[in-house]
Amino acid sequence: MHVVATAGHVDHGKSTLVRALTGMEPDRLEEERRRGLTIELGYAWTTSPSGRRLAFVDVPGHERFLATMLAGVGPVPAVMFVVAADEGWMPQSEEHLVALEALGVRHCLLAVTRADLADPAPAIEQARNRLAAAGLGGAGEAAGAGGVEAVGVSGRTGQGLGELREALDRLVAGLPAPDPEAPVRLWIDRVFTVTGSGTVVTGTLPEGTISVGDELSLGGEPVRVRALESLKEPLPAVTGVARVAVNLRGRSFPERGLALVTPGRWTSTDLVDVRISPVGALRDSGRGPGERSDGGEERRLPGRLTAHIGSAAVACEVRPLGAGIVRLRLAAPLPLHLGDVLLLRDPGRDRSEVRVLAGASVLDVRPPALGRRGAARARAARLEPATPDAASALRLHRLLRAADLIAMVGELGGRRPVCDDWYASPEHWEELARRLTEVALRYAAEHPLDPGMPLEAARHELALPDRRLVAALVRPPFTVAEGRILTRPSGLPTPVARAVERLRAELSAHPFQAPEAWRLTQLGLGVREVAAAVRAGSLLRVAEGVVLLPGADARAAELLRRLPQPFTVSEARRALDTSRRVAVPLLEHLDRSGITERVDEVHRRCR
Image (cartoon, rainbow, N blue to C red; front, side):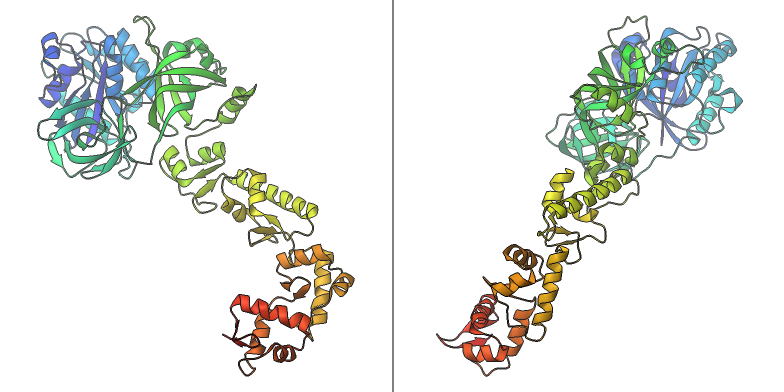
């Protein structure tokens, strides 16, 4: 299915044209039909000459219902802009055009109505020039050299309807293909109750897939999809782009302006930093012909505006940051991604003026607080080169968990984590690795007898949220052992490592003849040095003042198993070729380790 919205001045024949194309009545309210004025959004559909299903969202043209018009156009990828041949370009034509420009709608077909009452050529030329100036065009090659493809038509006589249907076919054929795997965000534009079924909401699904049984989120609360309809047909699943009616089960209370979203795939936020793209009068006042914007357009925005996206319209406070960047504080949270475009409108402006002021492209959905002097200007400078993708999100936030990154941009963009589910900007990750080397070496110099810097101390020093990140940053020749960063192969200062090697040489022939304290001191192993060597695993302490080489207990057990069982301390002492000073604490160490056990007051045996 393809969905096209109408746009144009009030009473230029939008609903009449949709009725003529589809044979359906888009004005669903009795008051609309009585007054001949579209008040609410209308929907109708037909089949194009190529067999494509084509749905129309018919929007009101009256300036009083601009918010309703924006609710209909917001989620739609293409528009049929309607101008009457006998009246030409009118004030609300300009308002709708400025809104389309701000929303970033670029695929357009121009339908000049009442071609039976006046020559459509002048209106076509005038409207084409305005549409082209705003950056709107056809899709693919449909527009030709003239920019927007245009058709003169009469909804009353049927003149040009065939050409219009073919032009619509070409328009939608050139639209970019939506992603069926994209996260769902269905802006609700109607809510009603069906007896026996319950709550039903409708909206335009731009991409993604909704299936019966899916659990979605509505205002942060879970809801279940009970049933689906598209163009009055019950379906097990609907893929965008499509007009869809969703029967919901849940305790939430839906209303227009809320959105059904895939849980965990959007960031619900009431504070965003955005890049302003002035449109209409605001753009024209910012610079003369051919001049570049000086970045001052954010200062000309009023302090309070209404932000529109999809069918949502929320009040917001505007704080200029600089360089065309502003911060918006929204009156209610919205589910957003980087790159979403908000339309900023001033409802307090005189109705004779264009009230749509700018488009606002979302650069950050989790902006930091601005406290110190100059923080706003620094923030604007940091955001100025930002682009709406995963790389930009990581550049701004440096470190993000997968769930947060997905909620910001909808996907991981093929990126690989630096550790578990943590993602980092490459520049920040390399900077962290460099800083870790510095702090680990400084710690080693300040604590020469420690085997290495504790991971928790390094985490605190680098202000990292997870100790696993510290371990992932360690680069050779550094290693991680027992929760510490070892900057030396032995984990010991060079003098202590040499003293241990001298002791190792002495014990090589008689591994259980532990040196006494005076000899350890001669070797350079005082109390602190011995403690450091034990922490580093270079020595085995079996008792206070009795140290052996690592693995001595396992070797002792091997020798003791060769004795007739059970055995005495004296038999063990002779087997190990050591003194009672060493044998007794060594046997007690083996008892504690579960290698040996006492049989009585005199005898032990190997387990």
